[in-house]
Length: 112
Length: 111
Image 1 (spheres, each protein chain N blue to C red):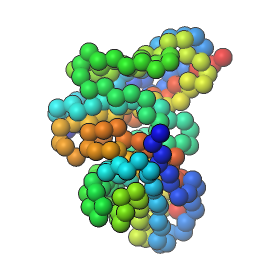
Image 2: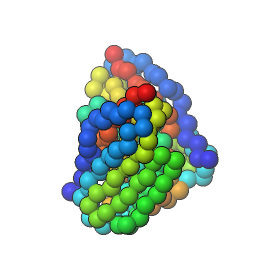
Image 3: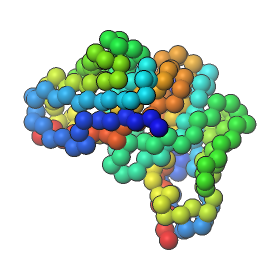
């Protein structure tokens, strides 16, 4: 079974803090994705990566950056957290660009 | 522009009352339509992938079908444990692997 894990289920941070969200997959998948999910807006793609050290902007990359130093790990970075980044963050991975994406359990982030 | 619309937004059924959820899509060159189930506070759980019109997939009480413009998720004799939000997503021919998600249908099955 595919397993995608995220470092935290719940996180509370203060405005201006630097926030790291980590995602690890154990299936040797090439592609990894970060989404945020908000009521009424659905899932929106923030960043994705096809391979180690590669990254591509999604639909809403502003205020975020990513890092992929190892194939199994994809980190989302909020350089200076703001209240409008309070959301559910979901990581996903897929074997390649045409295969199914499998999601992690999510991190619910609250920025005060 | 690629777009996915799910209906209804919410559906309440009695246990055993069969129904269908709809996913209408517009996409340039469909490269897969995906159904996920999401429980409150959790990540989406993969259910089905459909690639071409006429294709059908089944799993327990769920059956997904696909036409050139829409997909249906049929739920036969649902149970309370089928209560969840069901998400539909499509991948187009842009070769990025990117998925476009609908807003979801929240299903509540009452005993």
